[in-house]
Length: 108
Figure (cartoon, rainbow, N blue to C red):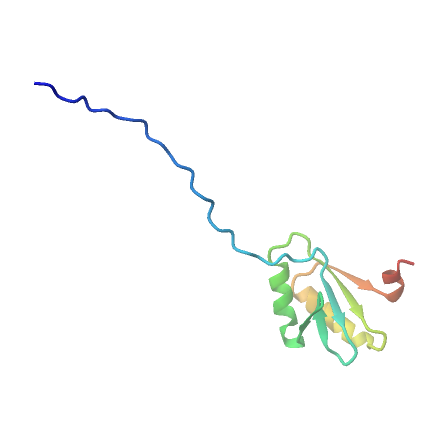
Protein backbone atom coordinates (compact mmCIF):
# COMPACT_ATOMS: atom_id res chain seq x y z
CA UNK A 1 0.00 0.00 0.00
CA UNK A 2 1.28 3.40 -0.96
CA UNK A 3 0.30 6.44 1.10
CA UNK A 4 0.99 10.07 0.36
CA UNK A 5 3.29 11.75 2.77
CA UNK A 6 1.68 14.70 4.42
CA UNK A 7 3.46 17.94 3.56
CA UNK A 8 3.50 20.89 5.88
CA UNK A 9 4.63 24.35 4.94
CA UNK A 10 5.89 27.30 6.86
CA UNK A 11 3.49 29.65 8.55
CA UNK A 12 3.39 32.90 6.60
CA UNK A 13 2.35 36.26 8.01
CA UNK A 14 0.95 38.51 5.32
CA UNK A 15 1.45 42.24 5.91
CA UNK A 16 -1.79 44.02 6.67
CA UNK A 17 -2.55 47.61 5.68
CA UNK A 18 -2.13 50.16 8.45
CA UNK A 19 -5.35 51.17 10.19
CA UNK A 20 -6.76 54.45 8.92
CA UNK A 21 -5.38 57.44 10.76
CA UNK A 22 -8.13 59.82 11.86
CA UNK A 23 -7.85 63.12 10.09
CA UNK A 24 -7.08 65.75 12.69
CA UNK A 25 -7.01 69.42 12.08
CA UNK A 26 -3.52 70.81 12.44
CA UNK A 27 -3.45 73.51 15.07
CA UNK A 28 -1.30 76.54 14.33
CA UNK A 29 1.83 76.96 16.46
CA UNK A 30 0.80 80.44 17.62
CA UNK A 31 -2.52 81.09 19.30
CA UNK A 32 -3.79 84.64 18.96
CA UNK A 33 -6.92 86.04 20.54
CA UNK A 34 -8.21 89.15 18.81
CA UNK A 35 -10.46 91.67 20.53
CA UNK A 36 -12.29 93.43 17.72
CA UNK A 37 -14.16 96.72 17.57
CA UNK A 38 -17.61 96.14 18.96
CA UNK A 39 -16.34 93.65 21.54
CA UNK A 40 -16.36 90.48 19.43
CA UNK A 41 -13.56 87.92 19.72
CA UNK A 42 -11.60 85.64 17.42
CA UNK A 43 -9.12 82.87 18.14
CA UNK A 44 -6.81 82.44 15.15
CA UNK A 45 -9.37 84.06 12.84
CA UNK A 46 -12.27 81.91 14.10
CA UNK A 47 -15.08 83.77 15.82
CA UNK A 48 -15.78 82.81 19.43
CA UNK A 49 -18.21 84.29 21.95
CA UNK A 50 -17.21 85.63 25.33
CA UNK A 51 -19.12 82.82 27.06
CA UNK A 52 -17.25 80.14 25.07
CA UNK A 53 -13.77 81.70 25.27
CA UNK A 54 -12.48 79.82 28.31
CA UNK A 55 -13.76 76.42 27.13
CA UNK A 56 -12.29 76.87 23.67
CA UNK A 57 -8.91 77.91 25.11
CA UNK A 58 -8.88 74.91 27.45
CA UNK A 59 -9.63 72.66 24.47
CA UNK A 60 -6.83 74.19 22.38
CA UNK A 61 -4.21 73.98 25.13
CA UNK A 62 -5.20 70.56 26.52
CA UNK A 63 -2.68 68.70 24.34
CA UNK A 64 -0.03 71.41 24.00
CA UNK A 65 3.20 71.54 25.94
CA UNK A 66 3.62 75.27 25.34
CA UNK A 67 0.94 77.32 27.08
CA UNK A 68 1.68 80.67 25.45
CA UNK A 69 -0.84 82.85 23.62
CA UNK A 70 -1.04 86.39 22.31
CA UNK A 71 -3.70 89.08 22.55
CA UNK A 72 -4.25 91.71 19.91
CA UNK A 73 -6.80 94.46 20.30
CA UNK A 74 -8.16 96.72 17.60
CA UNK A 75 -7.23 100.39 17.87
CA UNK A 76 -10.52 101.50 19.43
CA UNK A 77 -10.71 98.79 22.10
CA UNK A 78 -10.59 99.81 25.73
CA UNK A 79 -7.92 98.26 27.90
CA UNK A 80 -10.64 96.83 30.14
CA UNK A 81 -11.73 94.40 27.38
CA UNK A 82 -8.15 93.25 26.81
CA UNK A 83 -7.64 92.81 30.57
CA UNK A 84 -10.79 90.66 30.72
CA UNK A 85 -9.44 88.43 27.92
CA UNK A 86 -6.11 88.09 29.75
CA UNK A 87 -7.95 87.10 32.92
CA UNK A 88 -9.92 84.42 31.05
CA UNK A 89 -6.71 83.18 29.40
CA UNK A 90 -4.98 82.74 32.74
CA UNK A 91 -7.99 80.98 34.26
CA UNK A 92 -7.90 78.58 31.27
CA UNK A 93 -4.32 77.60 32.16
CA UNK A 94 -2.34 79.80 29.78
CA UNK A 95 0.87 80.53 31.64
CA UNK A 96 2.37 83.14 29.32
CA UNK A 97 0.42 85.95 27.65
CA UNK A 98 1.94 88.25 25.07
CA UNK A 99 0.47 91.54 23.87
CA UNK A 100 0.72 92.43 20.19
CA UNK A 101 0.82 96.07 19.25
CA UNK A 102 0.73 97.56 15.75
CA UNK A 103 4.48 98.35 16.01
CA UNK A 104 5.36 94.74 16.85
CA UNK A 105 3.26 93.42 14.00
CA UNK A 106 5.01 95.68 11.51
CA UNK A 107 8.36 94.43 12.81
CA UNK A 108 9.67 97.76 14.18
